[in-house]
Length: 154
Image 1 (tube, helix red, strand yellow):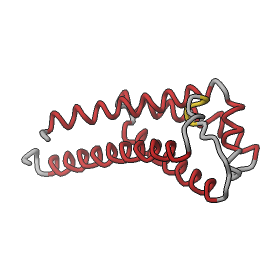
Image 2 (cartoon, helix red, strand yellow; image 1 turned 90 degrees about the vertical axis):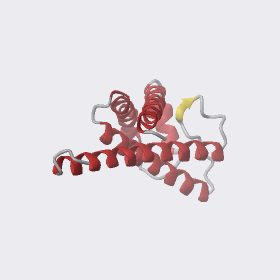
Image 3 (tube, one colour; image 1 turned 90 degrees about the horizontal axis):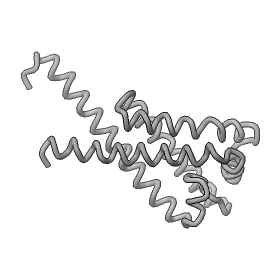
């Protein structure tokens, strides 16, 4: 795939990922109590921390989604989103292994009808895309740095 096509594909992927996280964050902002209950269902964190996380996490998702869409703090936004997805996947697998019947809460009430494996598949796709975008961006940065060191002769 040539460079312009790859750049367009990466941009489309970034717009989709950013939009997904803005939507997911917005759905949680409208129902912080429900989201706190969804987090509490995992039985990993104490309730006071769960409540704080339920109010903070949606805003982080929205800000990171905006960063990815707008290209401002792009790598930081992708890194945080990649870590959030990874933590969620780990927490979901642990909860399932402990026999907990959990509701994801990722997209508010819209996602309550997906099965555990449906959520896991969606999360793995998001993880692959965000990690892939991060790797591509890091390669671009490394190439630019090496090009700058060689006086632009690469």
